[in-house]
Image: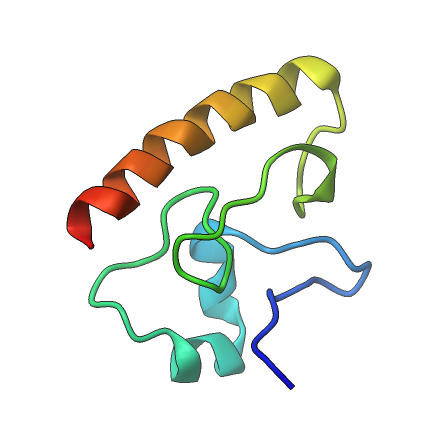
Length: 80
């Protein structure tokens, strides 16, 4: 079985610093940096909107998070 994204108890995808609360994340994260705000437990994979744990479940916030994710994708690609 391949790696999967970390989810909370309700099944929503955890992102950013919230991931550090999970012992399995700290064992598996191999990068020298913390995950970006919208980055999942899989480096370079980002989540935005209603699927994300703690999201506001509003269209406007999902659109904003989506545009932020593009910026994080560029940062991730620049370091690889």
